[in-house]
Each structure stands twice: as C-alpha cells, then as structure tokens.
Image (cartoon, rainbow, N blue to C red):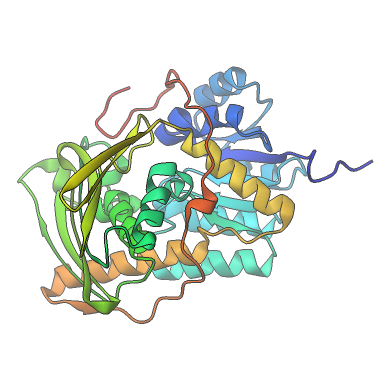
Length: 372
C-alpha cells in the first residue's frame, strides 16, 4: 500500500559534506517534517563514517559511487553542496537518473552550465530548485511586502555591504573551482535587489580592487557594483573577501527607507529599521532554521507537483548578471543586459519558520575564515 502525499517524506541524499552541509543542512532535517536524510556522498571516509553515525544514515557513498546512489531507488532528491564548478555535472547526472535536485547557489559557473542543468531537468521531468534560503526567511520577505505596500513611497535605490575575511586555502578564492567574491557574496546583494525591486536589471557596471596578498592572486579581494533597473532605479553594493564581517542592505523610497542589519545571516536574529516621516521603528526577527525551510518547501513541491519559485531561471539570471559584471570589469564600461526571463519573484507567502538549530561539531570542515 502506497502512502499518501500527506504521509510521505521525500528522501534526500546530501552530496558534499563541507562546511555549509555540516553547519546547516544536515542538522536541518530534524526540523523538516516532510524530508528524510537517507544518504551521504563524500570522498572523505571519516566524514562518511562519523556523520553517518551522528545522523543515523546507513547509506554512504564516495563520489565514484554517486550513480549507484542515484540508481538505488532509495533517493528521491539530492542536495548538492559541492564546489561551484561541479554543480552542472552532479545536477545533470541526478536528473538523468530521475532524481530531483536542490542545488546550492551560485547555480553554476557559466550561463551555459545553468542552461544545461535546466534542460536536463526538463528532459527528465524532475524538479530543479536553487537554494536561495532568504526566499523563505521572514525578515527578507517582510521587507518585500513593506516595499510593495508603498509605505516608503516609490522605491528609488538599494545599497548594500557584505564582507568577511576568507583564508587563502578556501575554495572561495580558487578561480578554477568557481570561486570569486561576486559569485559567493555578491550574489546575495544582486538577488536581494532583484526581489526588493521585484524586477530585473537592464545595465550593470563594476570595478574591482585587491591588496597585494597571495590569497587574492586568482580572484579580486572586492568589487563595487552598480545595477540599473527599469524606471531609473539603481542598486549599488560592495562585497569583499578581505574586510570585517558585515552584511546589511537598505532600500530608500520617496517617503522613507528600510534597512536590514544584519540582512543576510542564517545564524542569529535579523533586524528591520523602518523610517517614515523621520520616525524610526525597529523590529527584530528571531532566528529561524532557514535550511529546514528550503528542504520543506522543495519536498512539498515534489509531493504536490509544483514548480519551485527559486527555479533554474532564478539561478541563471544571477549568473548572467555576474558574468556581465565580469565583462564590465574587464572593459571598464557598462554592459547592457538582454531581457532576463522571470516567471515570479518571492513574497511573504513563502515564509516557513522553524526553530534554530544548535551549532554542531564539525568534522574536517572549516568556515571561510578558517575556523573549525
């Protein structure tokens, strides 16, 4: 007897057991009532053994055994937490095996990679979602609703800063692995500007700068960016791999402004500072398990046969913008964007709140700054 969709859980394999998988994804299954962690994929036998025991996962596979995992009949979906340059390959292989894909952002390295991922999933009739966790987070989605309400008037410009110190050994500063500050951190600012304006940029410009340090030999330390949106709206941001940890954004309208500080974090509270007619109201949103929200939402899309909002097109648009910014940096001139396809933008209807997780002990993994 087959269980109903209401009773069934989507069985996930987590592919790649690095920092983000260990610190956020694996523990999130405890808060995801319609999702079940059934398999782990990694080339590190210690991670497979120790994390398998920790999370009571019996099925573990090396990367060479990935296809066997996909064809086992025991996995409905994969969460891909691998370095960016591997996203295309592991997505396409999953799709060809009929397995749904939740892939970390950035979606891939090139536009062609993203298009191949979308095509593979469409050809195999499987769901593809890109892991934009803030599309389900209360503070960010309520910011969308505040702007849409007209409370701050007509939105005119968006500005943001996002920075952290990244150690030399981290994959984020390895160009061949898809690293780079725009791909890793700038994508949050780009995506936030897009969902705050509920629109797509038409022109981009950027400059880069670096200190003469060995960790910035392959990628720039920081970039400052300008995005022009329709109706002569502007978004600007600076992101850095070599500065103190900050992460905030502000949207300024004709009647007021809204600032989120912090705005992008997945650990800890996020706070709104809403100013209208010279009066500021502060609202703090308690921490939630943003990764459980992703797992729940994607599982529900599979069970209910719904198309995910943060789709392959969402991921592709951000990569098109980032690669256009690369061209602007190389040429020193603004770059016009062709019309970007977009079916919908996220809203507060997608908010999913679950209690925050506790920081787990990491196994052969470190955060970007090198802390274990």
